[in-house]
Image (cartoon, rainbow, N blue to C red; front, side, top):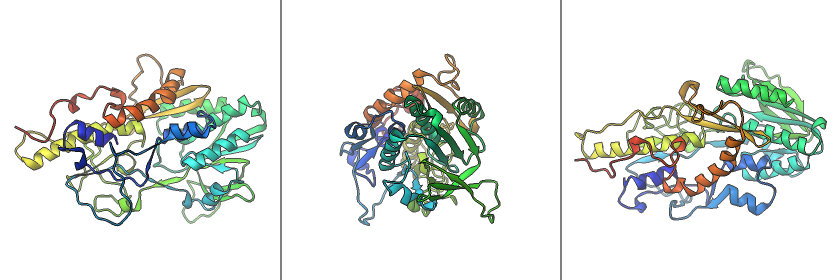
Length: 406
């Protein structure tokens, strides 16, 4: 959506019909809304939830193509198809999630997010277990957001003392970047949430309400599993490349579109680009990352198109993307931590002159809760949003339009 709008803004095609966007759904989901839904920030009114989390795709910016088997040729290809949620890789997970009587849900699917929201609202006390699988996943801090929002709701219902809350993560720490990891560890400690590191969910016995974890440090041949009972379970699935992407000639052995990490151009085919979850970019997979990647991709697509028309043109594919990403982490009580960093976990904070961003604030909460959703639906489809640059396009994006060079 962001890339298509920016391609039109830069006039890389003569008309909108020269762009075809393929999507498997007639609905476009605002996935960060699933977190807010599952944690109770959107309430329980069905119409409010649907309005906040999804919209019908319109012909103004999307053409829906069904899986009819029809082949389409292209001059340039931009891959932004995300990852596949693999609940099926956890034995018994799909059955538990689909069973309305089973106290298992997940914020990674709209139906399951609605379910975990109901379960959280109606919970009377007991053991709450939340999981986080091995990377890569969408936003490394996302799974613990639900934990904090759940803990807050138990306090508001005055049953916190009757709740035992545990967070099992495959990571060796709370967050991939130490500064934020240390701060989040202090938060879970203060909230009396028990973290368990390097544990990955492998099996669910929904009949007996037990989840089984494997220690990451175990040898592959070891089959010992840790048995953990639960009264409420929030499950996060493993996330893998789509089969059609993994098998493509432009993908690497891990199944991701193999792109240069600073240009977003395929290392194998110069007319293929990728961004977001399906790409090999070694950074956290978040909306903020995509908004930073989009103008870089479009700028380099433009320069590539110019070079294909005129090899002597004085333009070049530029190494402009520095790995910027952001992970806004709800911590409860109308506060949020805004983690921002570049490749290799280098801190790069927008508001560091005013505040220590490892400390949650209400300002960041209101940005995430109210400003970002509005921006997503109203500015991104019109090529009016450039991430941390807000509505101001980065300097490299301004200037020349079209693919003619003189």
